[in-house]
Length: 318
Ligand code: SAM
Image 1 (tube, rainbow, N blue to C red):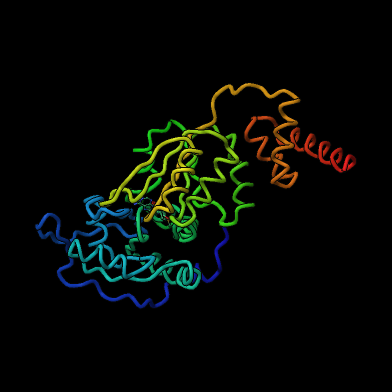
Image 2 (image 1 turned 135 degrees about the horizontal axis):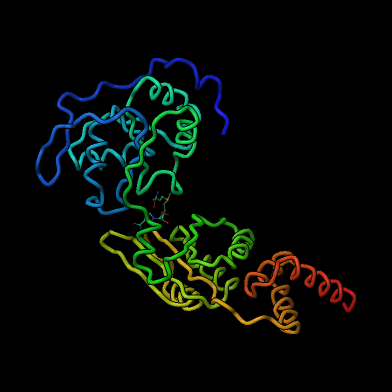
């Protein structure tokens, strides 16, 4: 990670409002005064729905910080108000991050304690913050984690799928061809796959997961920690069919797919050809090779070479 020269300049004057007099917080109806926290960047996890899912240390940190850097200040204002916290808010999101970073780093070099939050859950997990943390650490500035809720972990806690190894993908591509390609690349990962997905794309994505990965155990975790929390479990095909029949679910969604079966039977040549021919009816040669390689566990290069052979043979016959 490179840092701009300006990041190393002496601290610039920064438009940071003074901390409110009598800074403090209210928990379970009890008011407490904010105590000092160490200078540096404090990366603070906030709830993913239920406002109770925040640590005492997180509340203390938000109350004692010189400012809270928030993805959407309106969202964070609600959280701070819930805990009686009056710390000034500064917007830090993907559209202003590049412009804000030098000022924030300057402020940190000057000894400020800044708390970084996102709209929900853990900052940097499919949320802003990575560059600020990377540049702060590159400059030797203190960075502290105040851990807490994250949808990826909450979903793993209730899905009923193996958790000894998992792979967090975040959001898949929005277009189906790119999505299938990426799913195929993930097909041989020997652990549970975890995806974030928007409610309106869940049906399409479940269909693509079923088409590429076949009949694997899966779960759809919706509105975790909230009033309408539901977890649906079944094979990818069953879940795709169920949501297709019911219509798209509402709310926030995590999709989870169990690992491929250990020691899946080796694929014979005739089998491989049949799978490739089937896949090439709906996909390009390259995508078909990726899909079949993921499905069979055979090396992608080997499957691709066979796919090219079959495609040129089909062309000759046609
Ligand atoms: N940083 C957050 C975290 O630690 O989980 C995630 C932010 S990401 C931009 C938002 C996505 O996380 C949503 O689209 C959804 O896939 C997932 N998500 C967040 N809250 C959720 C919840 N309560 N239930 C299910 N999924 C949730």
